[in-house]
Image (cartoon, rainbow, N blue to C red; front, side, top):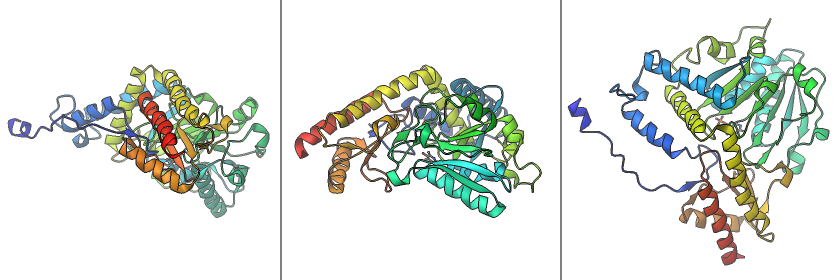
Amino acid sequence: MSTLTEHRPTTAAPPRVHNFSAGPAALPEEVLREAQRDLWDIDGSGVGILEHSHRGPLFDRLLAEALADCRKVGNVPETHEVLFIPGGATLQFGMIPMNFLHPGGVADYLDTGVWAHKATVEAQHFAETVGAKINVAFDGRPTRYDHVPADSEIRPSDKAAYFHYCSNNTVFGTQFATPPLSGDTDRWTKTPLVCDASSDIFARPWDVARHAMIYASGQKNLGPSGMVLVIIRRDFMESARRGHAKLVSMLDYRTYHEGESRPNTPNSWGIYLMGRVFKWILRQGGVAAMAKRNAEKAKILYDAIDSSGGFYTGLAKPASRSMMNVSFRLATPALDERFASEAAKEGLDGLKGHRDAGGIRASIYNPMQKEGCQALAEFMREFRRRAG
Ligand SMILES: *Cc1c(COP(=O)(O)O)cnc(C)c1O
C-alpha cells in the first residue's frame, strides 16, 4: 500500500467556470469531489470504483442504494421498475417501438423539437418494417418549435399502442408545464404514456404513476452520459412484443429487469455517479426544492431577456418557456457569436446555441447555482450597454 500512496492525486483544484453547456453538463461540485476520491479508493477498499467487480458486494450495495434513492427522489410507485440501460436516450427511440409497437398497430408522437423529431423518425422506420403506423399527433415544425401544443392542438388516435412526448425540448427551450392532455385522465388509464424526460428529469416533481414509462439520458440532470434511466410500469414492460418474434435480448426491457440492470458488465461508473447525484438531490431537499430553485434561476434570465427592450429575443413563446434551457437570440448571428465568445472570456461557458436553432442557449440544470444565472444576467445587461 505504501508505494501506491505516493501516487495519491492532489485534491488542490484550479478554479472552475460557470458551465451552461446543454450536455454533458455541469455536475454538483460535491459529487465531483466524492467521485475524485472514490475513483482512487472507495470505502477504504484500496480499490477504485472503476476497478470493482460488478458482481461484488460493494457494487451490490451501490446498485441497491442507487435504485432505492431513485425511488425516493422520484416518488416512484411500487407498480414501476427502475432500470439502468446503456446507449443513452437515442437507443430508447428505437427500443420503444421495437418492444411496444406491433404489426397493424399505431403509436402517437408529438413532434415538439429536435429530439422529439428524432424519436418520431426512428419509430417511423421501425413501423415501416413491421407494418405498423406512426400518428404525428402534433407537428411543431411549421412554427419552428416555438411552443408545446395546447391540448386543442393535439390529434391523438383512438387505440394507440402508446403515446410518446418529450417533456422538455432541450434545443429550442420549450417545456410542458403539465403532461399533454392532462385533464383526460381516462385516456391515460388505457393508453400508455411514454415520456423522454432527458433534460428535465428530477428538476421538478413528476407524476410517475400517470406514465407507463419515463426515460432520461444521464448527461443533463443525472450526471453520466452513455446510459439512460428508465422508469417503467411492470405490466407495460411485460407487454413487450408478446406473441411476436423474440427480441435480441439486450434490446428487451425484461432483460434489464431480470438481470437487475447488469445482465452483462454494466457501466458501473455511470450507475455509481447517478447514485451520487440522487443522494445530492435528496440532501438539497428533493425535487420540490430543485423545482423552486430552478424557477428562481430561470426567472433571473427571462427577466434579463424581457427587460432588454428587444435587444434579446426569446426563441420560445412565453407560455412554453423551459426552466432548463433558456434560448434567445440577438439582432444578427454575428452578434450572437460575439456575445458567446465575450461571455466565455468572462467565465460564462457553453452558451452557443444548438446548430439547428442558432442563437444563444443557457442550460441551467439542477447543478447550476443561482450565482451562475446572476452572473449571466449581469453580463447580458453589460453587453447590451456596450453593443446596444
Ligand atoms: C440529450 C437528449 C437526448 C439524447 O441523449 P443521448 O444520451 O445523446 O442519446 C434525447 N432527448 C432529449 C430530450 C435530450 O435532451
